[in-house]
Image (cartoon, rainbow, N blue to C red; front, side):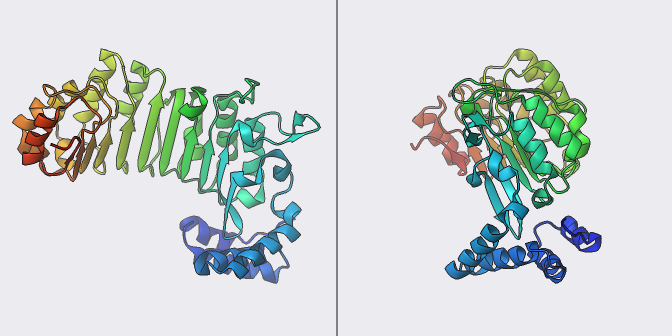
Length: 350
């Protein structure tokens, strides 16, 4: 059984990026005869020195005690799903093609089962990043469980230091993620959240979140309202892939731009947004604009007519370090005019 030291673990929990805290814990574990102590020491040394011999030493320690470090997880998902750091699993990427097969059948019945086993394992105690890339089916259209089960497993496990979570991947098709309302208490440490698929947020409580990137399919008024009403005390980057959304969603977004309680928001990304012209007109009068450092309106249908509010209010946009209008319908001639008054605009070359 793994041995624990609550005081030393508390030091890691206070700053999961502090390798010195792991090193101290590793020394204590080694004194207790726990092989994880040696793994912590060799992996830290390998990362800090890039010494091939230290890398081989870390691999030898891992191989010798593989069952202890990874156990049943090693038979469920491919080894390249894991990124290790300082003796613990740091990052996991799950997708249907990484589920292992034994005697013609998957060892794990679903990705939800894998996530539950992962979050219960001592090696994932300080897991910081989890990416689940699936639309609930594998490449042969066999079910691999529901994203809702994955959300349930995360909510039940309450991971201690999870910083980045991605659910769904448009490259695999749209996932039915379902409601996230019950999961927020377990996700309080999150710094970055990526959602791609069908989902609702409910009453969001993410006090540490810095970045949210949502690809909803479809983008409904309810979701827009949830984004509008959520408190975002530390949010720096808001990325919304809205596409061809309905007018009522645009109205909710305009209300979001008029909020005055987003003190940390400096990066607004609205790529491929059909209503970018309406947004620009509102943004030029929004209190949010003065706080932004970057604005991304790339890959949309915005035209020469659509950027007139920018030209008419160039002073309001002049402070931006980057205004991205690349891959839009803005002509080279109009872009040259923009570039003349806004040197940091990105798009067509004149």
